[in-house]
Length: 506
Image 1 (cartoon, rainbow, N blue to C red):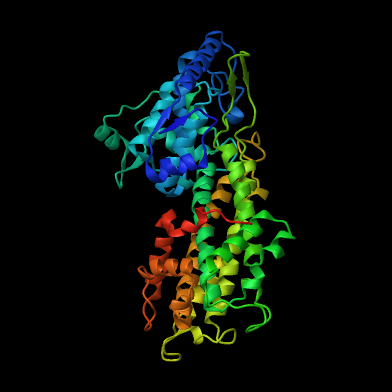
Image 2 (image 1 turned 30 degrees about the horizontal axis):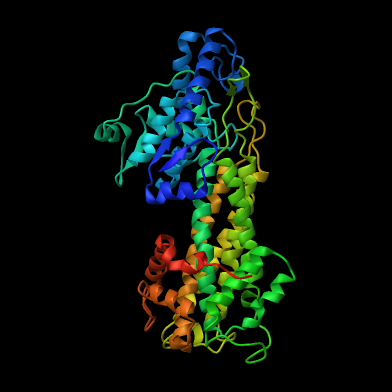
């Protein structure tokens, strides 16, 4: 059970809720704080204190005072008018994470909502009712207004949801589970949509999937080392310790552990003096990729426990402060930085693919073909990998350096953080396919060298992957193999990358 306190949620908690369907509950102490905070809002309304978004219009309309009798209608109109998302919907994992993160942010007790509203969000998570949220339409400041408005529609019993594998009207799903729509009170509509949960949820899912893919890329690179008779001296711990980057040291140590009993790797001077950079610099490059991931983990952990709406209500001080915590710049920078690591993970993988298939760069059969000339083998797999790598390079352009003024120039600087997060996720999906192609080629290469000579860990990985993609005995439609192995990489469990949880001596 994951207990929401507002400031103790971890990325591992999110993983268990999203992927293992662990139930969520609201901390009782926070429930009391939320309700006390709500009482402050109601008292200030009764005293006719002017508060942005509570009894005023929004954005450029912030100077328009709203009569008390229209406060609920104000919140309803806000959700309706702001639900302008377009394009394909986010994956269910992301929309579910959005609901979870919004519930956690509101449970801090600074947003002026009722605990009933927070509980409704938690109920959606636990029931597996995931809002249909269009991916496009957020500027990433004033929060993810458009995406979160589609989330808020669901609480009203409107919009669409994914439920039990089907896309349906929210009212239909509510009827099946016996849920009632909620009526938003003053401030609650604004509290729901003024936040960074679309970009942050996308960032969290990207992080969780990328962490696993990095370990898988190391395993795949280890197979390639065997397929190309790679030189192990490049992973000597002394070499990496003198540079001092911890992630580099750890990658080198894992490569040594993976290949320690291999009879396919070589020593310096045995076949050649040095390997190409795509082999020799695996620790330096993948280690640097891990640095981007570790930075993202730090910033995402802060953001999933952040209060990001506006205004905020500080009950103890009896004050309401309008600020800019909804601005997505921290996450925009984070996701743009993470994109660099994702891009280079694919980039160096594609260069290893080239070495596996190019007969001028190894003594392997040309393009790993079983019958070179008559059959093309893996020739066009490298084309596909190169195409994905090139696409990643265009997506890696930083979204965070762009800004377009909105709301009649009241909101004159925005983050584009949601675009950065969406591009990072797209790049991750491209990169997973590149790693899948490298793995197909590496498996073919080690078969040529002799699988009986493989290291214990790499052979274990090879045997699992071979159950998904058979050996290349003749040309076939390789697109199916790429997609099947990509799916396996995405869905595989920790047991498939067991070494990643073992202690590494460095």
